[in-house]
Image 1 (spheres, helix red, strand yellow):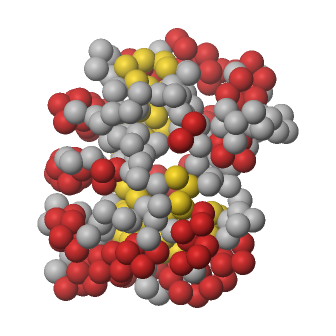
Image 2 (image 1 turned 90 degrees about the horizontal axis):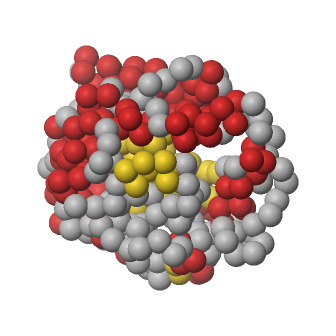
Length: 322
């Protein structure tokens, strides 16, 4: 893991082209170190360090590792006024990062580029995870024109190297389209002399794609800025409400409930990203401020239960392996 982190840091250095970009890298390190050291859960934090914001819970794919197809939550898209309220609130509260995705494909939202641009203007670093199907050359140019910097990341979930495995694991995807879209984005970034966003691919290892892992790494290493390989997926999330989700009892504190606020497209704030159906809503950002919800009695109680290792009293957390 340490070697991986060192390589990751070294790959970031190529984006240091000015004092401003050096500050961006420094801010990333400052953001990550407390989490890596396991310290953030011990702090009394009045606002979240990051938001996981859902532009939409609609998706064009049906991935075998994702339970979204079993979700009973109403489908929809976040309206821009609500998005702007949340972003403005985040800026005032000192939020350090916006993850602009949750349970859906963010590039299905018709105003996704306006959302990214709004966050860039407010100097709120944005991370977007996508399956890559909609990031055409036209959309890539539009993305690069938003003013993205090395503070901003676009992460492509590509769960296979070969066409056969990629399309098996991510049902509905077209391998050649995604690969071409990613390579074109990197090419255009150079052509347009844009110093950002950081481009990454992510691979979650599972039985169906394990044989592809080495070829995947060999292919993408050097073509994108970072290749992230995760050697396991969350089985409790993949099996969400399938009747097969029971696993080993949780034994460790979850840092996410100290670090990240999870926000659905309608403004509902849920306990975490594993709450696919919004069964653990702790507030709504149409009606309340970010700080009010973050310090709400219900969320404070959940943190207290975690701190005291009473995970079994929260059914969602009891056997979660995230």
